[in-house]
Length: 441
Image 1 (cartoon, rainbow, N blue to C red):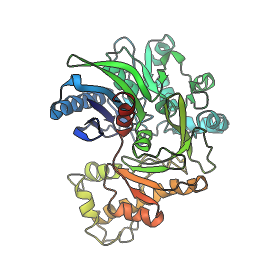
Image 2 (image 1 turned 180 degrees about the vertical axis):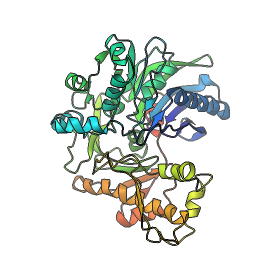
Image 3 (image 1 turned 90 degrees about the vertical axis):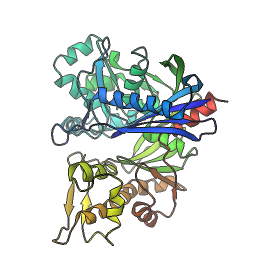
């Protein structure tokens, strides 16, 4: 028997088939379009998200050569916070998804902060007020899409993060759920009670009828029909929590740092939430077997996305694979400094109005020097999130990601933190590990 993991990310969708031992049998990946309507705005077409994920799912099944009846279960991991709203009857989105990187709601967050709501929100959700999270995005959609607020009040609209959207599509609209890790990223969920919070819903003007049912991260929550075979969905987790589990950070104090579109440090805090005094987030790590574990998180919004910007924005390279060779073609950065604050600054600064900057340019500066800056910048920015967890004693830091961490980035990180241990990309591993333990034994 096999496990099918669906990994829906910010810039691409991936599907992986694992065998009983956890070995990768086959994988497939496809990028999809990024939409930038205005400065600071980032959107995805919900239909493109589903088309890319459905496409790689069928492609990996064909590539693996196994029968769908031999798939024991499906696990889902996903980009978090990205906000979608659709019609409950037709399944038609009312607008493009607002991506987690989007900054359009910074002013809404400023007003909430000025009104003194920060301590209450932090106490219930473990989060700081920021445009990063789903609540202000959902509020914006309800207030700016014509008729959305009225339709939501009538119970006609459904809200979900990407996991919810995929499950809705996979089940033909029969199942509207999310898991505790994704719910904890909405700023509408009380992480202590494990429930949607009425005070937060009222503050953001969100009708409870829009919300998905929250289920544990592991356990059968729906059933899917693929090529005539009925397959259970038995694992859901946001991508960074999935990576924490996949890197085997199962004991309190263990931490991982994932280099993907962004760069996210998570440390296992155990069954009791730990409040940070250094502007880190307290979030749900996973919920399984009736136990909810927590994590401390430092969020760096832009890391590997710089590679995509060098390719698609500056047209400096034709493929992402060229960037590391370009970076190593020069001995140093030539005095160039790069702040890739394309989506504001996350932890520990939380400045939604910050913007990117490149300084130190001379006539001798080339795109190779800019590419060379990227790895140490990512290392330093991620170190700024790891250093504050020192009081909580992370014994080692697992480093992994979807762009190379074996070259300049890892060397820079090891200079800052000798406890870095090189791991493997494990974004979909939580689903595989959970399902092997819970379904395939």
